[in-house]
Image: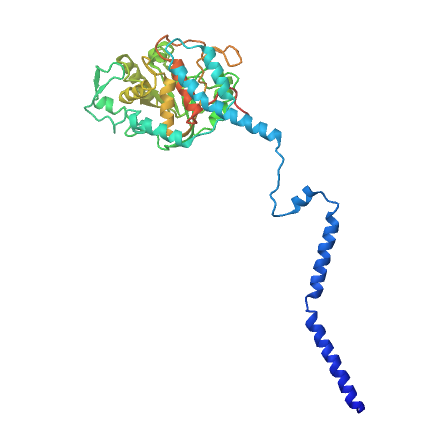
Length: 402
């Protein structure tokens, strides 16, 4: 063979071997090799690792969590508290249904339990209750006598002496506002301030004064040292005609004292039950004319007797069957209709606190109400129910200071 032919055969053989090599070992052979090497290394690494730890590293295996005994205990405690708080409604309702004389200690025990339950406003409960009040009574349109709801010529029946009537003539008609005067209705935050001795040293004054609308009852003192406990802001204050007679001598020799005292209320409305009893009418009208002649800032309003009769029937269905509702329950009912959020202060018809500390009946005196005239315990049980249901909030003790 010629030398050139031998060289050609050699080159052909080398090319054939190279082609076979490429076919036998594809391009990913190094990757497969390194993958097998990584698996082998991983096996070597996990030989000293426990099975439990290798299980945790596997994404397909659910993680086992150790139960925290403290967490479980807290959850159980929370559920028990929730159940206890839920059962409080039934306990309060049973108290309000009792026919025998109430036990003060029974109420104080329930109040102690209520204080251990967190309070939260329940919008649905609130809306349902307000709708029922509006359906029966409609405070927004009817709780004050106005020219709109009581035209000239009306023969208005008294609230309690319902068989007696008073004809609304021009001179009486012009005492009434044209419409209900509460222009900013509904108010966001309202405070209804009772006069209970529990307000002493409560330091609730600043909190009360932050409210959008403040209701007070029966011309209570708000100036001097008491203001830190009861506040000074007043948008509406009720006036019992008996106070005008006993404290201010029917506005004769003590007229100036009366005007000085009410000046503390700023431009508040003075609300009187002129048409509850015939005996109230003359003295209520005298208050109206006294304020008008003196050109003071306060304005006089009169409770509508029809509204009060309907309100009494509403609460009668709930077991409050007293001769007449207390002013506190009347104003609370009005506040629920006029306000989005209602908080009650100084509502405490007991002689002592839950800590057995004696308290006066009022924060300014210890004069007790007439026996049998109001049903304070039954009224209070109803207010407690409203608190527990999240419709309004009762302040039982001292206020928190920011």
